[in-house]
Length: 180
Image (cartoon, rainbow, N blue to C red):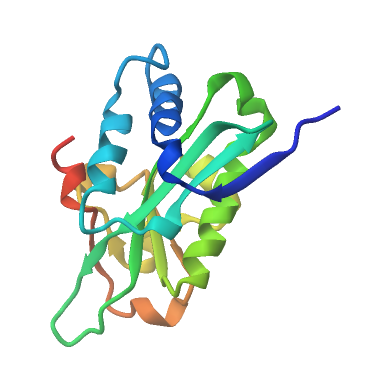
């Protein structure tokens, strides 16, 4: 019988489990700190933190995945209205349960929550072949430049309200990404 996957908001008692998820997903084991695990801790203590957009996936009561979106910004011309934008990173799932589509469940839940909170655009760096299933496109096609020009082939955006990006601009993650 298949296990049920529950996606919910992060709670304070999930912090250690979230670190283990990112360590295992991006490193060699669950106990060696990875850049991604340290990034989540740094973002959690910073000004771009949006508690409602830090989600975990549970299977049989254990945290097996995590996704996070934090406040970003798009630098625009002074006459252009600001855009409510989030940057998604990291997305981590324990290797032994990746076949259960937990990453997809986390992404769908995160995108629904972001849109419900009134976010207008979500940006991320990742595989276009993977993220197109969620509606992401290469960011330049919607007028948003990546923060690092070399990221252009893999930097993507999902526009919830297409009328809000007239004029485009350059996306910037929270400063914690620069400290990675």
